[in-house]
Length: 326
Figure 1: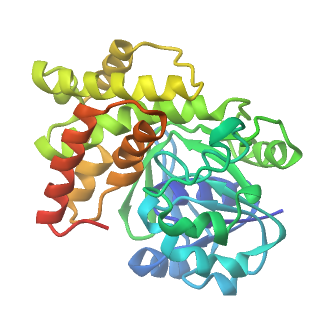
Figure 2 (figure 1 turned 45 degrees about the horizontal axis):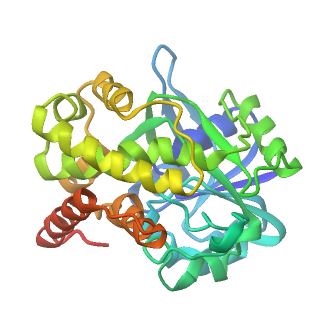
């Protein structure tokens, strides 16, 4: 089995190092100093309570050097994916599976969804239908990414917490391709359950990302602060309730209530969300995948999103003023 991780930054690097350590045939698409370091001395992984490991792994900025793969696992920022669809083509053969490990609502959300919304394309996450047309939804295997990691120095990934990558077919089946990848990831010491209702997990993760991320970018507050401050907690709560109404209209079930979800965010502690990290590092933020897409779904199902609209407008302007709109 040949596996290529497209976007081997923090999360992709963590997964790639674990797979390489387990002896999997894995390659990485990366760029810049991080790529140069991996090519010259290997990929180093630092995990808590374990000795750092360094593994040799094939890495390139040019996918054509890596050849056709059985699985291409995409771990880029959501707004970066449409621009690289053409570059991914040398990796894709007749039977290649695209594993979508990207934050936010996925571009394939309404593939094999059933009912009148079947095949609906989300403009906020797939402008112009580039991914739908260029990759094809039948190739897609969904993935909800839970680990937290960071590239501490070029060529070195520090794992912070979590090791679960939930997998799921758009139609909810436990396919052989999903089970096969699950086994390989488990052999590498990762949790990789195959879920019949992956969309439910997508929403549980999105519930926090939708609210905590933009609020942190606007206030520069860490999770423990924004989840316990009376004002920002209420803004997050209203955003989450608006999103829950939309998701439930689409058949999603939430196993916990909004207050428990916010309490869970507070329990993480002084964590800087990905949007806060991006704005501090002058990187574009995943505004449309995490916030704009929920607004778009609200209009599709006829549900108002007044709080989400307000926060979306504020964080979009914040990004524009900083020159960080994708």
